[in-house]
Amino acid sequence: MNHIRTRTTAVTALLLLPLAACSSSGTGTPAGQGDGGGPGAAEDRPATVTVTPRGEDVRAGEPVNVTASGGTLTSVTVTDADGRTLGGELAADGASWTSRRKAVPGASYTVTAVTTTGAGRKDTVKSVFTTAEPDRVNKVDWRPGANTTVGVAQPVSLVFDHPVTDRAAVERQLKLTTSNRTEGSWAWLEDHSGRDRVDWRPKEYWKPGTEVTLTAELNGTDSGDGGWFVRDYTTRFTIGASRIVRVDLDRKQLTLVRDGKEVRTVPVSGGTPGGDKRSWRGTAVLMAKEGTINMNSETVGLGDAYDKMVDYSMRLTWSGMYAHAAPWNDRWMGRANKSSGCIGMSDADAAWFYAQVRPGDPFEITGKDTKGVVAPGNGFGAWNVSWPDWTARSALR
Image (cartoon, rainbow, N blue to C red; front, side):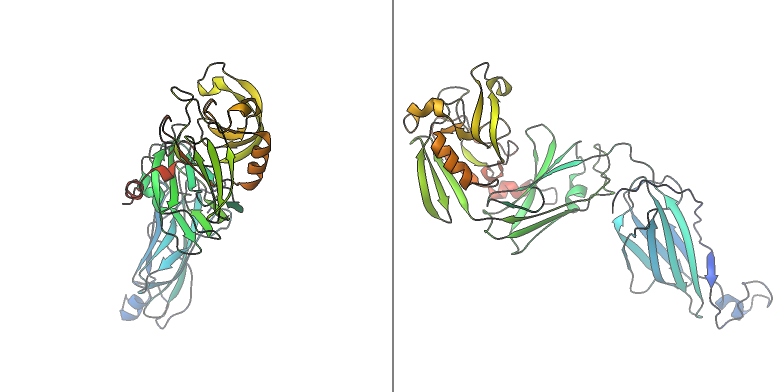
């Protein structure tokens, strides 16, 4: 349910009075009137209906509950100010109804309940309650985008604007389904930006052709200190052909493996050994194909070493490691690692390679003199965490 902007003020009673009633087998006279309160009058009393939450500016984040005594509920409808319904489940005995979703912040809800008594009396009763506006709204940036085709290593990643202190409450609202029941898990980590983040990755690389749907029913969920979510999120994507990029920095070469077969090997030059210009090792995931971009060493803490336009740029980490064309290093391709941390290729090899890969393809990087393994939150470094350690990061384990 989307965040509701229209507000309605109304008085809510704990005991709801009938708006309309059908005649029953009794006299139809209110209890205690006309017949001295005999048995027939007692049978004609309407059911008592209770709704929670109730009142004005109540706290959001709870389901709507409706109960009946002295009769049963036959139907319950909860609508917001824009006419959208909040679905729910009626108990088998008709004594209660509970919404499947929570009441969202800053909303007005009208509850309409139809009851039936044992004597056959039917009544329709209504009540309105409103929820308080959120003190703070938490938003989500998620990847991959909707209706995309990605590589076999692509995780689902959600980064939050504000801290998430109630991680279990948030994770319960995240529903990921696949076309082939792929085994996987959510894990909480710190994004390279320092923000809270939760990623879902399969146990092994995705099977090509898998269709994936994420439904994040977060509207009305309290993230804790970070505030409320006021909308839902959804994304659908498909896993493309298997393309694995193997980068051997000791041998200074890169090999593209497609569907288990080596397609081509090209010479490269990686990060200069012995200092901050070394490359990362481990599995990095192609985040984006950015084409021709300006690369400035000062933005990654390397002083004024370079400031130039670079072609066929493929981002591998948030910290600035790319694979790209590096014609200025042509004499070192396949011979020595002389870059400032990126994986450089000739113009021709970079153009060919750029056309072959897509976001989500893994780069499996090996080499003795590197500056460490890519961190989980530095791009998509989830594959550098063992499966037991990954599943242990779920808030629901």
